[in-house]
Length: 357
Image (cartoon, rainbow, N blue to C red; front, side, top):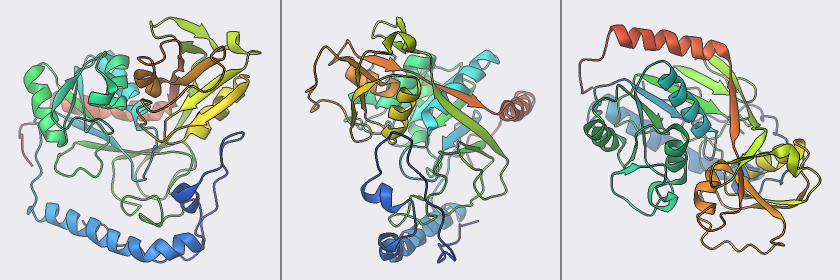
């Protein structure tokens, strides 16, 4: 069913406080946190956006636009909000769980932020600029086959051809990529939830919410909707990683000023988590999400330890191999994994038979 268009809100949503010690949101990120005058001024544009979203869904429902299934189970991990919701750590966790359960998963992605436009394999040492920082991190963290392409079904075909033993696919992002048929949809929400509840550009929503998905994972309060929802928590690992893979305990960095840099959607959360670990930040530098660091200059005292996110490290290490990357650890409600295992059991006993939808 096509999603209904946005309706005028009856009351404003509560604003979300920025992370303690973090940066104040600016620009659209600030507007999206509440239903203030700027959001209302943009709201008419969201009506036009919502009409286009509904039209596109209708074209797929009427089979004017084609949906294709690759022939093995497909799990889509995505979100309905613009910006980061924490999909990549969930993808990594899912892939590792699948591997532990005896599956041979592959990962497909668009490869956001890369300079290439073709379909290509992603290896643990692939340059992030050519494959995207998130696919590069997934390949490094899981060693699973990863392919990127503008069309996810193209990536799926190429991956299954190159790795015919692959028996399940995880799609990193793609909730709105309706050309790829899927068997399970998981929607991720960060602590901001749906923000002010408006569609783009007045709010953060890529499509109206609630919408039908199989499961919801949420870092904050459960969002509205009928889908089963499960809590997740993100925290920093107790160690940082060197470029050669060696671990450095975070406790050993306490007492010495460090310079933190982050090119992620919510850098203030990373900085706040570092401070919560007792690290003294002489600098906390936020760059645009997916920045390639090619234009970034290390202006601070080079004697300061440079610390970054694990996603940024795949781009920063070739330029600054002394940087330390702090991995993000994920806790997911055990009930989610139990539900996933039950679904996997069904797929094992009743494999998909049709490659097309």
